[in-house]
Length: 92
Length: 206
Length: 253
Image 1 (cartoon, one colour):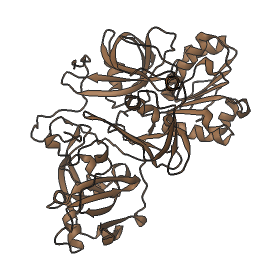
Image 2 (cartoon, each protein chain N blue to C red):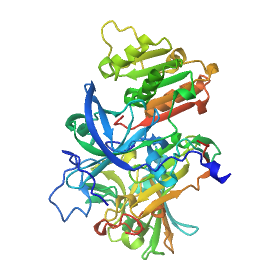
Image 3 (cartoon, chains in turn orange, red, purple):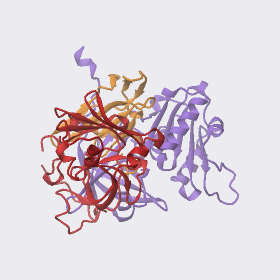
Image 4 (cartoon, rainbow over the protein chains, first blue to last red):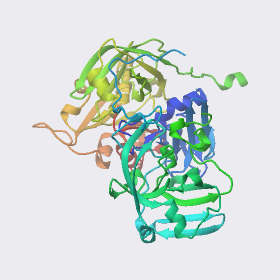
């Protein structure tokens, strides 16, 4: 969620759901993701979200490493997940 | 593509001033100082702070806070432009220009054409050295006369106001010379490699 | 095999037109907007929407708001708290009139979601305007009349700041399986017998279901609130994976 005054506040993956939905075409927030730096597994919705006006930078709640980054530009959508080992979606 | 519906009565809170020659295209002037960070605000203790100037495996210069503060200081008054469309006019900054930083280590000529600024939280941004010298870039430690708040990049941030503000990396720790240009954090994820607000170079492909 | 993998694929969420049908005053700075949507397909309690406003000069602002209404309602309700110096919330709370339109896209989010099919006991912990998505869950639960044991632990600054106060009181009065526990942290009315402090570990231990009952827990509010409550719950022995959180910005909703 874009904060009103843009102050330094952390939101979470739920707030990136709209952008991620454009990329994955399915809800990502309930998916499990494993952090490549520390191995912990979290739901995407519970990751800490930064930089929301420029894109989504999702960081591990345990070690703060970047797990996933996503950006929407007029020329396309970008996704970078080198900080994740896997993303696991359950059958709906 | 249909025009989006106008929401009756909704107005930008950001005052638009008739200073067309100071506001790049697509920007809106704000009196706030919005914060955008790619990670948590680091709480850096001055006794642990250092700035390194690096070329390949060599350290060309390294400063502790005390050493850095002892370098010649410059104050500038400038406008800043964020790619998220806000511009802030007449902001004052004090710090050490990149020219003075190079002088301090005896660099008459930059040894390579590009620099990657490495900042806390694994944030990076790449800038041609030609855009950092000649007074165009500094390492800023004070904003509006006061020590730079951690929220805004304190104790020290890079400041390159003629480019979009994501290039002015907060919490800068290391400047690494590069022979070949490499893309930094946002530049490798869809944002423009150079970022000139006057040419509206927001995104890769603009 | 390939055809079974994506059993349900969510449709691409597109921008659609929202028209304000009604505006309800909730508190001195919170209003609910009842919206008619051109292409709404329904939602799950806990989900949110993105809205986009366009000014005459083309300037656009986008924000997210949790859906306050249950899927059983025809109109979609958003509850908005006015933030000082906010750009969008003052417009939504003070300027918007029935008949006005803006763009909306959703529903969004499958993580912070609860339906009666998921069962209970259900533990809801709200800080300020964080109560909004939890209210969608409570309203849905109330309509389905499944008697899921539920507690709402709700922290507000004062009684005037308690959103949905009368509705929550009425729900709790008629439903023996629902407990609503308020705590007023800054100002309490004369004779207030309830809690007066920020939600801490003892308060959570007292109000929430014990870990052995395997409750489904949802925590919503500001980031410091959510992180503190989650930490306490884990220290009390709750399974971290059974605690779902949603952090709001300073705009709350």
